[in-house]
Image (cartoon, rainbow, N blue to C red; front, side):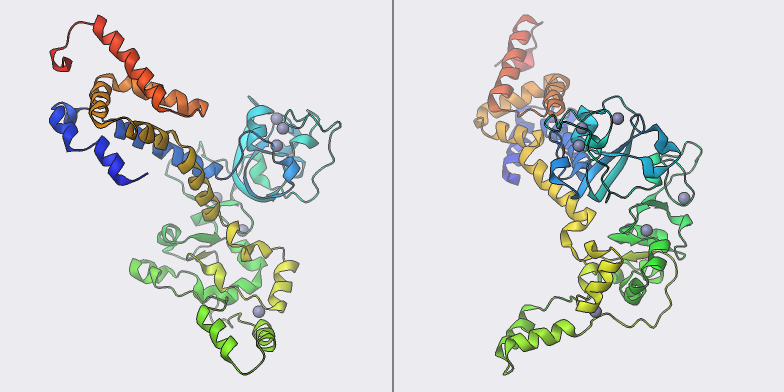
Length: 396
Ligand SMILES: [Zn+2]
Ligand SMILES: [Zn+2]
Ligand SMILES: [Zn+2]
Ligand SMILES: [Zn+2]
Ligand SMILES: [Zn+2]
Ligand SMILES: [Zn+2]
């Protein structure tokens, strides 16, 4: 969808044709508003499927997940007895249940078919399935977060609360509860990923990379944050070329560079949570020894570029670009010829709320808005108008 198309919808001719334009909301405003809602929606749901249960796909790299306390009341006392269900199951199998939104989780297999109440989306499974042994559960499944084990939003809190999710343990934390260095509130906006103090302790090797973490002192000057250099452990094109040009056999040289550990030797003491710049994961060494270490500590996902929440959200955004009623509305509008477009917009300004309702019904039902739908809407409006008290402005 080009900007030119949108401009023609909201362009100067419209203002000339309709002096009331400035005081009324435009169709584009409505569609923009809807786009914002959809973007928020997409950010959480990302690539998650809202119709099919993900159980058959096994442990999915990342998906939106819900904990059901109606099906697992014993989870209130013991998070290990929780069940996490996928987006489609949350709609279809756990409607009106007490669900806790877990945002997104990595490597989790939908638990719905393992519950006594059978999964409606997997009718082919004849019996209750065994527990998913590899799923990890924590107190988030009980609806509490952080070290303070409070719900979110916290009904007893009077000040605004910002919670950050740890990239490793996936729990959510209040900034003031994770030994973040002073001034870290600025970092929390600038960083792309955060690792909580407990995970920094647990995975000692991360402290060797702490020179790459954002420093609170630098946060005051935002320009410096962007200049944090990330050393890419993947050979660059130039390096690869020089390897090929070298007299040594390429295979031998590659082997050598594989063995050379690129893990920095940190001289600085790092304490507390760490805030990382975009792309910091690329700096993680990939030598055999380090790979072994990641495996032992179950943090191999750090090497996977697709793992980050940012990436997941991008996939979601890409999906709505193809499916959004915003795009569809604009496209349908753009396909109507120009004189009619102005008619449509003029009519719209008169009938704004009704059209908004009309478009929202499409968004709510996930239906595609077509040119015909829009024409049908305005045809309906016109016949209504002809029976109404005459409005001179609209007579043509
Ligand atoms: Zn499911
Ligand atoms: Zn349930
Ligand atoms: Zn289900
Ligand atoms: Zn807390
Ligand atoms: Zn953590
Ligand atoms: Zn290494």
